Length: 329
Image 1 (cartoon, rainbow, N blue to C red):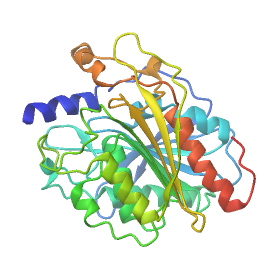
Image 2 (spheres, rainbow, N blue to C red; image 1 turned 90 degrees about the vertical axis):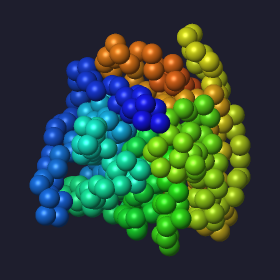
Image 3 (tube, one colour; image 1 turned 90 degrees about the horizontal axis):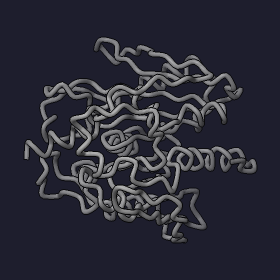
Image 4 (cartoon, helix red, strand yellow; image 1 turned 60 degrees about the vertical axis):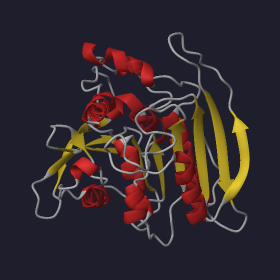
């Protein structure tokens, strides 16, 4: 069990040193105070083309990852430059294994007192104090542990986030049993059916040692129930990318909605997909040699969609819907 956790941890953070990449806007480290704790860092991207009333998107890294790496991996800064919104990248704290993490309730973090919900809320407040961000234009997404954190924020931060988008994330059973939010935010989720880290079938018996978590199907059903939406369409997307070195994957887009509710759930199920952020910017990553054997479990496996573009499309859908303007992609 410990070995599996260790290998999984390595994979989730195997890209620890992104190659240098140029940004047209300002991208730098910030500090925020969280209660009585010492200040914690995060990274902020401010595009040169910042809108007069910009949106804010938080992007959270995976277990053992870091803020700069997920920025390079996701390519969200490039999308922010094009559309004029702010991007904040929280940085997880180090655990006893010296891995950066967000405290979502893993079994081996049971003794941790770190309150990452308060940390995220402090980041948002600091940015709102500095920039004219509309209250209904605050969004969050994340990969793996960052995806788990997205689900936690959806349950614990009230109406702070207009919508959230977990990628390769899981919902801990303890959270599912205690998610008492009255007005849940719209959710976009992306998961791979062959993900060996965040199991598609879940891990209710805690065989991997992370703690019990629900299957992807149960998680989608949970949010569909909370949002009071039903499935309105199932669309197989074009299979434009066929990897040379490992199995193919296909994207199925499920959309949930209701005629009487201002809620939706979008779900991209990657048939044959692994532990992956589809459309990841592969050329901006550094691969330590000892992790090469783990690449086949999912990294870069699906390039049929660009997850970052799809996530922004989803967030922008709500901005346009709330303002009553025509959606411009």
